[in-house]
Length: 230
Image 1 (cartoon, rainbow, N blue to C red):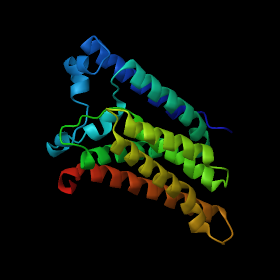
Image 2: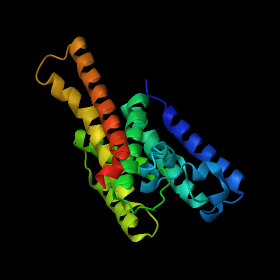
Image 3: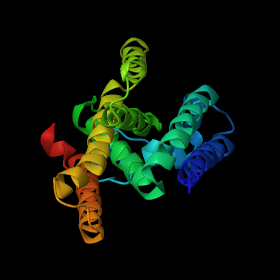
């Protein structure tokens, strides 16, 4: 039975709800107006925040948006990618890959961004889903040109458009692709040329899940350790 993209719907709903709360608190929908929003102020991410041990921002910054256009573009992208990927990966793996991508993007910001560079948005996680799509296409041995072109165009925009976090996007992309590769290729490596019995398949699946959990821990740990790595 085809998996319904419930996690995708939930993620979109959470992002929209958080944005609505920020707008209600600040009574406006632009970046500078959000200074009056306590949710926004306590959720954005700068490397200095991590140096001050405010580690929750590694997660919460991925659910903030600066304007109607910002959240609109991100949520449309999340919906399109999520409704394609979640039925393929299954809800559990999809959600874990999303979180790995989010924390990977945040870790990249915490390590490589300027000291006072404030970052907010789901883009890091969404780039991770682009990386996931590329790995799936390659695994299926399908033509990857369109996916590569989409990623390249988005990275070019990240470079040329002011105010966009290139390091956050690249971090999310790398961690999303890596996590998806672990999820899809580890079972093949565990089974190898052996007869794929039920116990062996369960062990292969369990090993892949364990690898994803390790990837999540690594992404979070890199973010926490960012001040020492800068």
